[in-house]
Structures are given as C-alpha cells and as structure tokens.
Image (cartoon, rainbow, N blue to C red; front, side):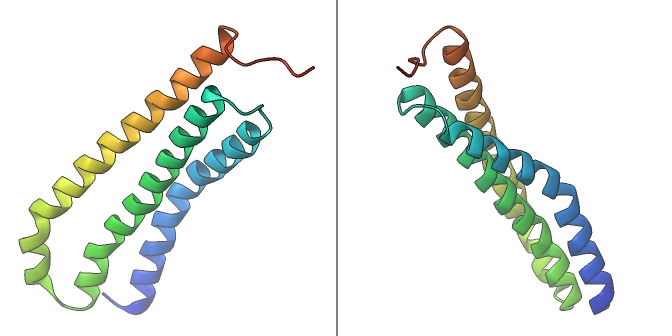
Length: 117
C-alpha cells in the first residue's frame, strides 16, 4: 500500500465518521445551555461516551491499515482477535452512552428539567 493509498483510505474513514462527530458536538453545545442537574449530567456523559467511542473506533480501524502499509502482515493476523474484542467493548460503551442520552431525553420530556425563573 502506497502512501497516497493509505492517506485516501484514512481520509475516507474520517469522512464517514465526521458527520457523527459534528452531530455529537452540536448535541454537547445544546446540552450545555440546559440548567445544571442530573439530566444535563446524564446527557453530557452519554454524548461524551459516544464521541470517545467514535474517535477510538476510528483509530482502531486505522491501525490495521497502518500495519499493512508498513508490511507487517503477521502482526495483523495475530491481532485479529484483539481487534474483535476492542470493537465489541467499544460497542458496549457506545450502547451505554446511547442509553444515557435516551434516559436524559425521556426525563426531560417528562418534566425532569426545572424551568429557569
């Protein structure tokens, strides 16, 4: 794999995840405007977990390509199970972050957010 091929692949991976990161950033900005409380804390924690899993997932997806570009094919076959476990753990964390965001939304819709005076 040549340098330009690797760069194009990395840019395409970033391009796929960029809309999600932009949406999460907008979500954090909107939640920061909400009065402090457990709903805001839950929503921020969920959004930050989703952002972290997106970035770490991006890095984990890039690592095999970097190893291939370096010609270390034996490293990839040996790390296949590790990559699977990493992606599974990231999926669990992402699911937990989504549950936190939905919990905060449900609580806010039920009137859990105090109104400013």
